[in-house]
Length: 278
Image (cartoon, rainbow, N blue to C red):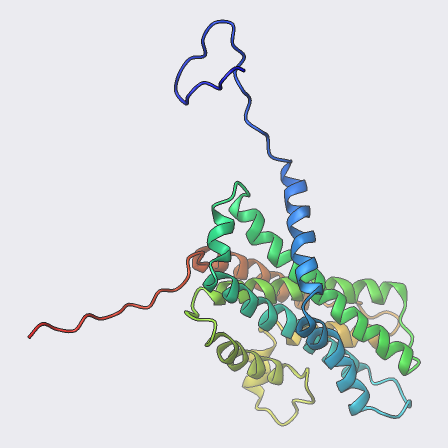
């Protein structure tokens, strides 16, 4: 049996050098990573309940009667389920994986780091978008609403962009949170003010003008506006306002850049101070 040559040596005459196993193509690696991460998400009961079950429950509790189609409420609760999944669920799971040493072990594999990094973000965006779409579908069927194919396509684009923006921002945020225990309070402390001023949880007419203006540059209010206008679409009006798209794209790009800078693979190890010598 021919033994492979040691690294840096020239094979002896008559021997065949052993070829290193080749990795699959980049596309196959990314698809495999997305499928793997998606299976983990689907096996997480909390992610399913928070992303799909809770928004549908809130919608029915807020509007138990099947009267007029509550477009703003349907859009708001759909965005609530989408964003809490892309922000809170994604960020906390990522920090837990880091602190448990999972990310460190993934980094030691031949899988390109960017592939794992992007695979988790894309998986979260797909899952969050599906959660928002299910909520909208339930609202349309329950309240006998009507959505055209063009409006549905516009809402799908807005939800995908919004999910990418929130997931990318959450990934960047994980680099600033040291422990898994502190992740949930910090994520929620940032999340609820942003969602509240965006109008996803109700009207914002009582808020000062400067706060509503600030909310229009955050990644929640453009989604509320885009989904509500699509659900209430009238002839001649744009399905997807260009400004909303620009804000969501800007947040997605900025979030990815910040995540690439701040993302940490190693678990946090608190510094233990040694007692001073007498």
